[in-house]
Image (cartoon, rainbow, N blue to C red; front, side, top):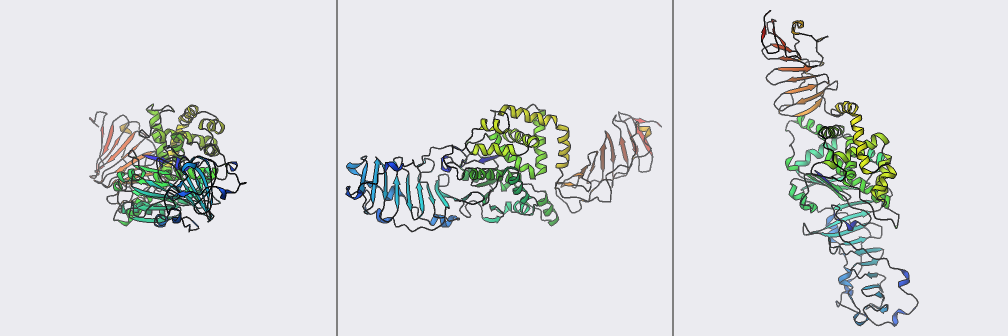
Length: 592
């Protein structure tokens, strides 16, 4: 359903956007002792360029900050050191020493294909044998990586500390850009998308920048109207210190094939993919379009839920947290990537805090799996079967409900700083992964009755409210239940007992809340049902009704006849005339 775009922060270009490792070689450290400063460098031989006139093409004139939109980023001329400064050492190649550059600047070669050129115009060019090159000029650092995934990828750091990374994207036969800026409250980084590339419309709202088609317009409007959106971000910061002070681009696709192309992942499923640089979602083509009835359209927005958007946003916030935790700490070991149990578990945990109905849904899914005996081993990580979402969520949720959020935050922070997962688990949660899974599932088993009672409340929280059609309060006019049919002296009229006003909901199917917390289901056919927790009332469009309570059932028909069926199957039928008839368990008429 969903897949995190998990990008380790230690060396962003060493992983693709889906978190798959690729070979990447950054610039080796240059030791100061390798470049002597005591002799007259101008006594060395002159050096000619391999490409005549290439040096003249380098006329540095740089902007002071990185652009934040695709058009301006595309217009930047990225210097290519490998083409512009291909020095010809000829017979001196590989011989350490000082040389004079064609511009009169000085060059030091410390071994073959490893040299530094301190140009006369103040720029410095460094070249390593692996093909990595670095240009430093006027406060700019332009680093060209060697990376098979993105040949020719260039990272440009501007004088104000902002950074723009350009790299090819083979799936689209184009180039992409990512933006990065230091910020006192955390790093700001995001993907820069070409406007209109994937969706015709754009709108910005709070931290989000949505690219979307008309199929998603109502979803975005519902999110704007959702009164918990600000609480979501504050809750993530309060519980886990997850935050992103910058922009989160969200591309909303209509077709799965387009999202797969954008992610360069032919296996990507419907739902979403999110990470450090942004979020992708699919599929608008399958979304239910809003009603032309304004009352129904408003209710549709009120009933809209955002599990995919919030889940993928948690991935984004967690990776920004990692960015922040590592910032300013040199010589750290590489960031450690959690197993999918925790990558997806924490994203579902965050989503569930602000979407109570989805939290109840996740609990029900877990209990269904436990009842079926479907419990995986810790090495049985599966996206297709939903295991990572269900059982990963159980581990994070059980930890939170028993120990609070601090151990979860420390677990993730330690991994960001390079601590292996097994070490971080024992340090912060006090157990290994198999023990944590067993302990978490046992917690849900032991607390099932309490949690299931909470689930009934969660399932209606935030739903729009319906009013009774005729002032009924969903209570039955009986003080005691009959033990046999002969105890039944009359059958209550239930037509207005718990019927809700759905006159403005023609053709709409959805779930609502009653004035006293009842759960109400309305179908587009005109039928409706109300569950009070003690009784379930159903009203059909043919003017018949039914209530089931404590094993008893009362049925009423349009013609006026009413039937009371006892748990043993015997019944009493009250005719519209007031006459009572009794029947045994087999439906055989009992003579008076």
